[in-house]
Image (cartoon, rainbow, N blue to C red; front, side):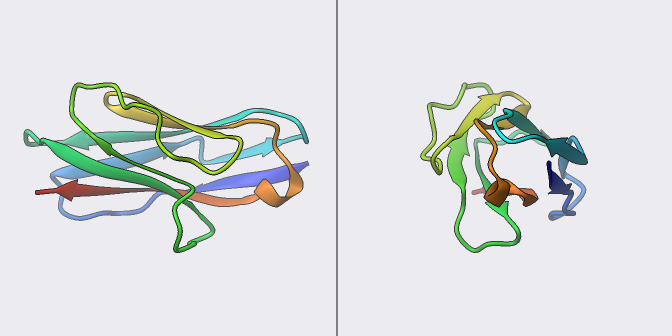
Length: 113
């Protein structure tokens, strides 16, 4: 059994709110895991960059650009990962969890102008 933690960052001004769930999850080898990232902006927006990173890594596990109402096309992800966007929520799914998947996952959101 391994733990997958989620870090909830404070990003930018109050106009952008990002929340992640679940806060922590324990899984067994072979399980599927879904990590959620809810993105709310107080003002209209055209384009966001969303990426998932693990353990503060510099390379993204998954990264995509999002439009407020459009569903995202499949984003380039690391093996066994899938990213889905159903506004205002992005979900990172991990298939067949393994020991080296344990760690802290961060949803990083940038408002592009």
